[in-house]
Structure formats: C-alpha cells, structure tokens
Length: 88
Image (cartoon, rainbow, N blue to C red; front, side, top):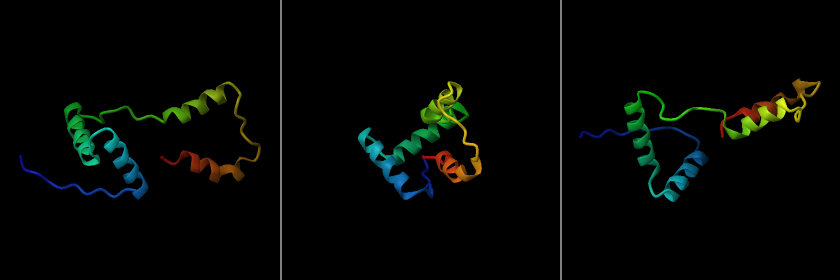
C-alpha cells in the first residue's frame, strides 16, 4: 500500500481536545482520521448522521413547551445568538 500525507488546518484547542479524547480511547487522532476515511469510502457517505446535538434539541423542546421566550428587541441579542450557534 502506497502512503500519502494529509495536512489539515484546525483550531489548536480542538486538536488538543481530540487528541486527548482518542488517547483515552486507546488510539490516536491520526488513526481516528484513517478510520473515518475508510468508513466514509465503505458507506459512500459520511459515516455518521450530522445533527445539531443534544443542546439544540433541548432548546427546541423548551421552546415548544414555552420555557424560552423570544425577546421583543431581538436585534440587541444577535451577537449572543450567533455565539451559541457556532460549532463547538
């Protein structure tokens, strides 16, 4: 098998967190990327369902049950809303 090198730019904190996670799982971040690539090719798709996650689901449920109220002056809250929607 011929090998190739992959370089990826990402946030340094995210990289550190991912490396810690995979170390705890008994593997490496590099091996996790290789597994991701193999599974993607095998399934001819992303190997997992992409969703907004639990935090956003809780918000939607809360809104449906009337637990969250949209402020009357929503414009002054746009920065806060944008921060909450940024990927973790």
